[in-house]
Image 1 (spheres, helix red, strand yellow):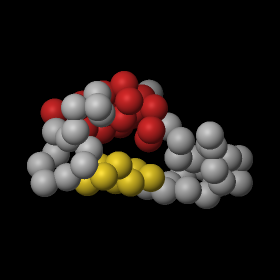
Image 2 (cartoon, rainbow, N blue to C red):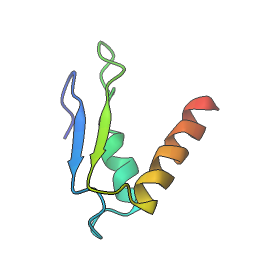
Image 3 (cartoon, helix red, strand yellow):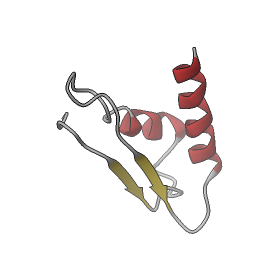
Image 4 (tube, rainbow, N blue to C red):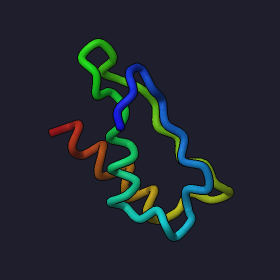
Length: 65
């Protein structure tokens, strides 16, 4: 599902259900409307998981390409 002008929060982002692919897909919901091409994605937990760090790095690399 796609919503216009949305930011995303993944609460308890280190939960095992959130692997790198899942986090990338969730983050990909942001900025999908031609009028609203940007937004924020927040991974919230006590400690940033390896998967969340990898997701952040992956997205940054793709945006720089």
